[in-house]
Image (cartoon, rainbow, N blue to C red; front, top):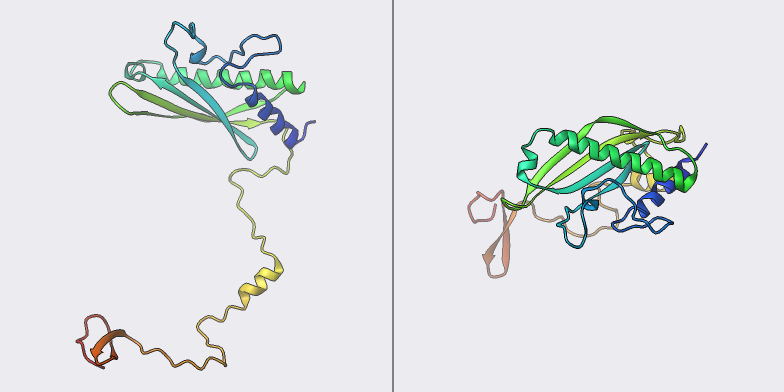
Length: 204
């Protein structure tokens, strides 16, 4: 059974081999199923899209980003297309993981796809979507993303914090106690104090 570190390294190697224009060991382009892979890169207008991953405890989050047109956003099946795209990416990760490590990778979808569409003009828009997957085979001691953190202060640092003197002054402090209130210049180098900011300008 692979350890957590081996699984993470295997997934990281898959991501390192999935950049735009990557080639396999036979010199053929690696196909993920993205829109940028469609058409001829020289004569056709390419749709720029891509994906990345992030680890959250025992879960893997797949992030997908793509340029879209408003008519695609309002068309029927837009969310279904996003879900299918992320599923294709998950299948690609599992297939390439098998090639890199020789072991199978289990990814179980958790929840629904979370997507947001934004635009910079009436022409240019883009979509950002993500979905979480449970990674099978991780060590049982892997902390989940919702696991509360534990207090881990060292004893020496804890003792230092306990020695806080607060408002107490040390016995060798011979300085005069500062005048309470708001200081007010009274002329001839003298300064008096007011009770508060609304008090008249005179010594109190």
